[in-house]
Amino acid sequence: MAKPHNRNDSSQMKASLQHDDDQKNRNRKPDPLKQQDSKDSRGPGSSSSDGSRCAEDDKPKTSDQNTDLMRWEDGATSVTAGSRCAEDDKQNRNSYKNDWTRRDDDASSCCQLDSLRRLPKLDIKLGPLNFSRSHTVLINVDIFKQCGPVPQDGRDLWDRNFVKMPCSPSSKLDSKFKFTQVSRWKLIYENLKALANKATASVDEVAEAIFKYNPKYKGQWSFDALSRFVERIPKIENDFEKLFPRIAALALDLPEQVKKAVPLLQRGHPASITLSQVQISCLLANAFYCTFPHRNSSGPGAEYHSYPSINFTRLFADWSERKKEKLRAVMHYFKKVLETKPEGLVTFQRCCLRDTDVPHWWNCKETLDKLHLTSQGSIETEGTGMLQVDFASSWIGGGVLDSGLIQEEILFLMNPELIVARLFTEKLADNECLIITGCQTFSQYSGYSDRFEWAGPYDDLLERDEWARLNRQILAMDALRFKHRRDQYNMGRITRELNKAYCGFKDHRGLRGPDIATGKWGCGAFKGDPQLKALIQLMAAAKARKGLAFFTFGDEDLKERLEQIYHLLLTEKTTVGQLYEVLVNYCAVRQTEGSHVDLFEFIRTTIKPSRSQL
Image (cartoon, rainbow, N blue to C red):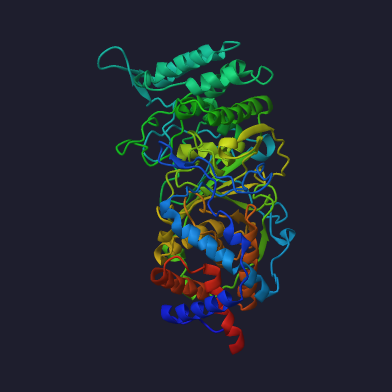
């Protein structure tokens, strides 16, 4: 294939595209697709108070495709006067559709799903579970093989590099007497012990206990969502007043379960934490009872202002049908872990792309790797055993503890162990992501956003690896959010997305991991272009030498056209570097011609003439 020109020759491209447009206008029959209403029937977005934004409604126009976890984009798109670029692009894609298919004779180079690498078939040899400078293990590794997860002895550390624990001797509260303080854990213990000794406890009793060790928030925090939740759930399912004391007892077990200081996964520092599932349940029980100190303020001057919220105060307030279904998932999780006491481990790994590892994209010689493309199925079902992309907020978990109910929040509700990442994971930077290995799925669901419903228990039967972790890997990587859709056609922003995806896709431990299951990353409320985001992920995967399973969530048009462009790029042996140059030229044309230039048609026009030159 001839290498694209280095210069941004927008005039030459403009002429080529104009010629194609003239030819199509002479030959094209009226296209009924263009006569359809192209506006999305999606609701407006909302902002959560911890800095993450949650879309209200983003169900794609597909039939009966609302039961799988990662079927959707990562947010809603509101159609406003400012969305003309999106409308123009959609009409432009429709106008090219028939001509595109006719030119390429429905050729495809996509692979079958079963040809992609996935756990546990990779048979990765992890070696012994050990501590290191960058890996904190909170269980005793010496007796792990013989005795299972036993808490590792250690000491409390009360400083800016570690989680400040509720049971720390340094956690104090002002007493009624002037200039004196009392142990906050003593107050927590007294009040939660009183609850734990009861056969049943009401929501009012739960709230009263919480205010005893959070006195400054009395009158500010509301428990109306929790109260109405208990009132409205049918009696056959409603054993929550019996469950509240048991959760309190689990929270009180914190000093026995977590004996070693929990480090913070801080910005700019690649590091991992491995905990047992029992330790996670104990930490989440404390989040439920709002015991974590210094975590109730998110203002700029707050100590943990760059971390997501962890105490459950926002989940308990401001009743809505969303909160009801969220609380059903959360309460089922606690009921299940109290009954079964899971015996596995979960690892949270903060990955950072160092300056020396950032690719020089224009020089990359890799060609595209394997691609499985489908408009059906879901990341978490058909992508089982692969590296499953969470269309994340930079604040891990997004609005899971508030009103958010899009892809990431639903993922965290079905796998509540993910929520504990909010305790120690600082907001992600542009060159960072988080990989979670071993989390368990506890629930099923149906619907999405306002139509979301908890659909009952899920029996997770995945195999475990050498470290007793379930063979499930979640990759949390955040896309850029654009105020205007046109803002993404900028090479600085495209390069940021390439680096973010590459950071998530590459192997960070020297062991070649599974291939990737993903979809329309950042294409909902974040206003990403599905064509551009698909191409970015293909390029990053190629650089990481990983195959890709791409789920279009019912979008047949994207599936067909991406299949065609992938076939072209593979046939022409187009390198990642050459594609990067094409994007440079495309951005230049977009700046000159506005929104009337379709990315895939631009690539086809740029790449395809080279065949006659071979």
